[in-house]
Image 1: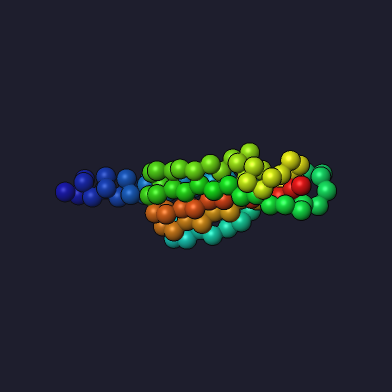
Image 2 (image 1 turned 30 degrees about the vertical axis):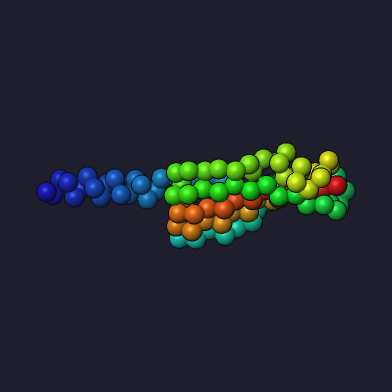
Length: 103
C-alpha cells in the first residue's frame, strides 16, 4: 500500500510539472495573456487580422492560428507586428489568437 502511494505521488508530481518550460507564461489555474511575437521595420499598421484556434482538455486542438490565415482575414500584405493572445482555464478550455497588424 505504501509503495502504491509513493508511486501515485511521483506520477502526480511529474504530471503537475509537465510543461514547465513554455514559450509564454502559463498560469496553473488561469492564463489570460497577450504577448508580442514579431516586429518588422515596416510602417505603422492600418489593418488587423486575427486567426484563432482552441484546445479542449489539452488533448484536442483545432483551428488555424497561422500567420497566413490572419493576414487573409485582415486583407494584409505587409506585416508590421504580430501579437499572440492566450486564454486558458485549468487546462480544460483554451482559446488562442494570433493577431497580425499591417497594411
